Length: 216
Image 1 (cartoon, rainbow, N blue to C red):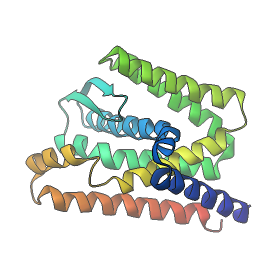
Image 2 (cartoon, helix red, strand yellow):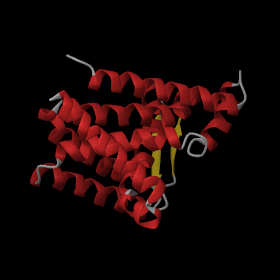
Image 3 (cartoon, rainbow, N blue to C red):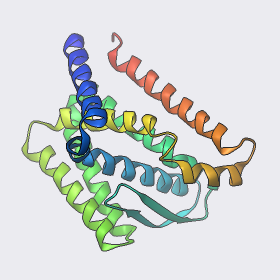
């Protein structure tokens, strides 16, 4: 089982790297769902940060180009801002872990993820475009979970690709969050916080990878 998991993991990493760095426009098209997923996880991380610290979420926007934003009120600005990058890294690792090690709940996890996307688009409505994107993506994940046997591989690949994307995109994706984080928290300039966030995301991934590949 462990050897089979090693091969699956290696194959997924190679596929992601090939598409991401050598696939050109075709690779970008194939990985487009990963781009949207990372954006959703990022904005959902902001939303969770607001909710967990006593704030409220006003709206969430996911754009077709992979950008997005979340408008919240109240809560802890530091936690909310950090929740985008580190929250999405944590959620991606959870997806990866479930896909790799917990076959019995992969279908349920995909269904929950699809419902969260649709609910986020409705409850935190910002535009018809954003809600349509989340609804279509959620419906696709729901279809895969209920009507195919791909749920485990899809969840594992999406989680792994999301984490790799987040780590690789560390100096671009959270740029605006880092600038606001520097103003809200201080202590260090945004460039230093950028590497602190990257280190935390890398450590989390390393710990998760060891747990997945290690002996039971």
